[in-house]
Length: 461
Image (cartoon, rainbow, N blue to C red; front, side, top):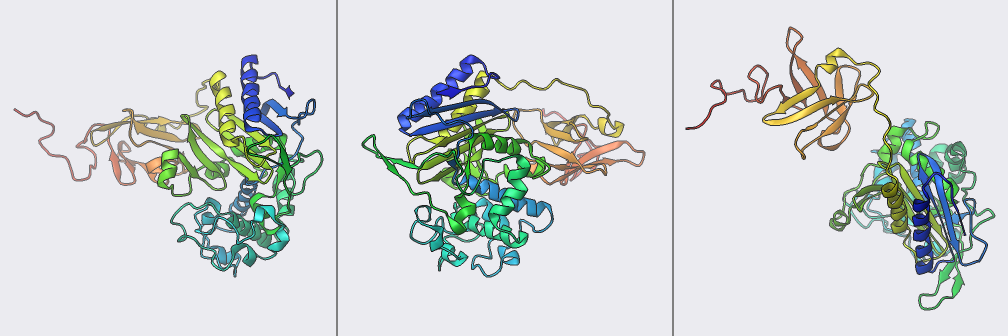
């Protein structure tokens, strides 16, 4: 009932199989299929099914619901990277007349647009998309529930607007653009807007009896960019690798990292739960591990894609029931099992191929007031700056090519670090967004804001 690759240890493979077997049995789903990705490759695939001898493999399609949103976000970010639009642009600039044009493209990507979570009745997931032929039918007469940009409120209609934006700017249907710009370059040949055999059937399981009811599989029409796609564990494994490393044929490593960066204000409950949202990706802190990905559901199907970038492990879970297993929990558990049983082996340490002496002389201890920091050189001519104590502000910095660096994370993200030199060329201090770092605490030879008491350090009798 399962197939496995040999890259994982036998104990790890059994633990993975046991976890999905429990999920399929206790979740009472007709079938469940899963895959684990490590180093960009599938290293394990498993399946459980109620039909003896007929377990689905990595080529069987399931509907993936809102994981579709991540694909739509990729298309929008491609437009941004090409300079066709800016994430800060209001939708009205590119897609006028929707009635929701004050929301920015970034707001729509991060679900901070204030738009309603769902369309007007009837429920769009279980009715034909032909009932909502126009954007106005998707949004209704009062599309907003909250002020634009103020809070995270998940919105399916928001991604319909993004799909319409892609169609307007590309001059082609969303499905065609997706196939040409994402699916074909990444080799996702079993991902499609319509089911293609072999594919799983959609089922509801009675909550109080072990009996089944078929679910309808509607074409979502205008709502397709929010949840239409069908895919496989094999294809979603490739997509997970793309979301980890990037692929310059589709999006750069830098842009997929941007997708994985929080972009929405968290509700108080979200802070407690450790969850937030990036640009088309869910982000959550689970059992001490930072995970990104997306879940999806449509009547008859549940899906999850979970990635731990730090562990270089991802998991895909697909199942064909309306409710039962918890795919997000299962995906996180599959990642945890591999990450804990077979921790990532670091790449061998290697010296830098070359170093600029003017940068090397900056390495070492620096003081911000009386707090001690360490500056270290990193790859690609970058540097890192952080406190020697356990806590405090720290960041990596990207070289700008002019002797300065720009912060990449935390408090110093976007701030410029530069070395200030004396007339003789020696380094006086570091300036980081007006903060002065000196070689000695309150170095009287440096330009310390407010000056240094001329009597210097002293004791107290």
